[in-house]
Image (cartoon, rainbow, N blue to C red; front, side, top):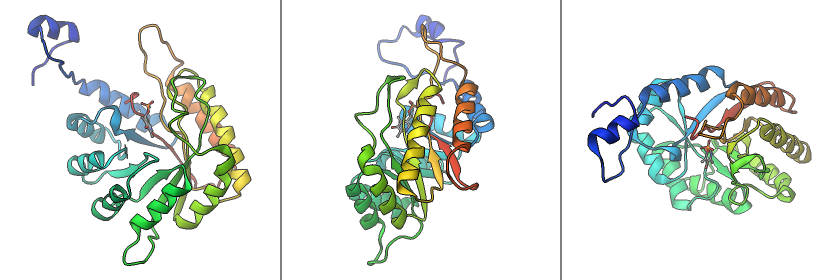
Length: 263
Ligand SMILES: *Cc1c(COP(=O)(O)O)cnc(C)c1O
């Protein structure tokens, strides 16, 4: 591997015709330490943002222990390079075979879902010899507004508000640990996006009156791009912490986030 002080000097030296991958391990370490030290909960790296083994190892060394995987390929990849990492299969639509392999072969116990069909799939795929799994951590992904984000995920993810309460009650019965997750969309330009989504989490908890063990605020933390200057990440963490503390959940409930591009 060669070292160049910046992208421009690489281009001058190599004049590449093919795309070149640049790794900045110090920047990744800095970003990971920032989340580990300042986010008031657990940070799950969303692997699809950049699945390179060198980056995975850098993040692990910097203290990131949980990984949000979106496919069986990512499950195998992270399990191979970081055998002790905790894998969370957070894509809300998975094949039954992928769920079964993740659970039985790779020790994955954390899954997200946003429909009754997906819940039934998870329950079937994790049973063994007709005995249901008793160690599942299941996160119900709710649909929230993407109005403050540069890239909306509202059409892609999340249970309809009218279905959330029933889905939470049904999932509670299958889960050892129950979570509520959302994603405000990528590159959310204001902490308000999280405050508004947390209000929907509150409404869902009240409507279903279930005990919630995990609140997962998803990704969307902005990076700085030319012409895009978001508020500092501390302001996001502060808003998330304050609104999390206000939720009607137990003292021992956990707070998670799933940063992708921010790491
Ligand atoms: C892509 C993705 C993320 C990360 O999103 P960023 O906006 O890059 O932080 C988190 N969670 C899920 C489920 C995703 O699909």
